Length: 156
Ligand code: SF4
Image (tube, rainbow, N blue to C red; front, side, top):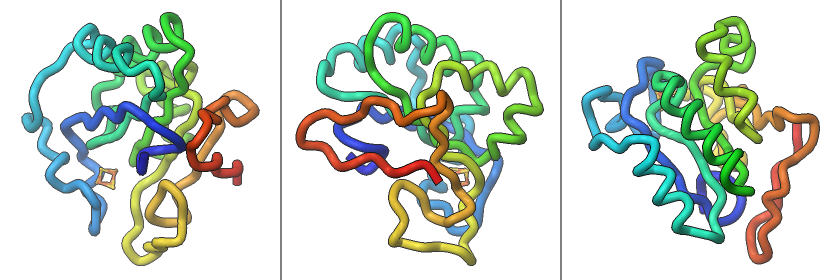
């Protein structure tokens, strides 16, 4: 419930090379950490929870962009769940790289940019520093409004 609005199945992937000082999850930086799950494994877990939407976090999912693109495509084609994704890359960096950009069409929301310790602000929703943007990628907020969940964060 901390990884986006409402109930969500959050996938914490292993590996992040951004190494932001003050990172909340430095244990996730190791690309050899965690345990392996393939797209089918993850899809089964996601589908088993009918109430929850989906969050990609880490680590940084864009370091495993091929697999996350396949997973996101399957989620969007086979369920009505929304996908929020956190990354240390900026949207502009992703858009400039066709390999990274392949994931964008399948995401509903991207929370982008590195955490900047000097700008840490605990009053922010779903991000640690104000440089990080909550970006609705398809022009309007996704329908994350499951009854009993927290409100959506407005687009800034
Ligand atoms: S991008 Fe996220 S996971 Fe990676 S070092 Fe920065 S805050 Fe940590």
